[in-house]
Image 1 (cartoon, rainbow, N blue to C red):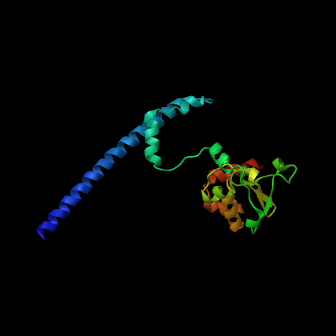
Image 2 (tube, one colour):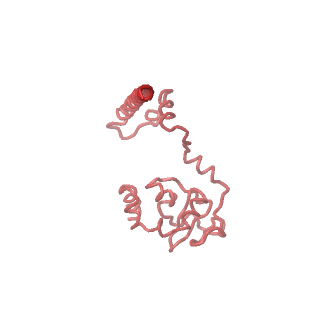
Image 3 (cartoon, rainbow, N blue to C red):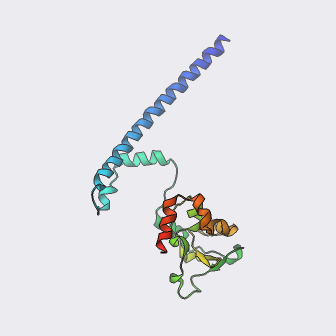
Length: 189
């Protein structure tokens, strides 16, 4: 019984030392992040126009902090996302509920009024307001007289499974935070 108690004590001491090391590391990272955010705040405060180089200057320590915070997550730029979806198309055979509008068939394809200002409708709702640019060159889906663009064919097929869920702005009130939805509504006034 005494041996078991001592083993548990040693185990708990190891756990406590690991927790303390983690806390110190977290405190250091939070301090560096706070310092960087204060630098950005001081740069942009009271200014109407700021060169991006002043805000987005990242030194070696900033990269380390971002890598530690993101882990193995891959961060794509809008250009990377659009490039990855180039050459892909939304196939009519794979859609059930929505019609597919092909850009090569419609004469004034650029003038089609897209919902969500041309951002991917599926990621807008499923990402709780995430504004990911859509690639209209893949085609757009038509449902209930409205046109929806997507960032990938998979997102379009997900939308097609239940377009009512994504398309109804009344349902978005409970899904999305207020500012993105109201900004999109203001655009149409």
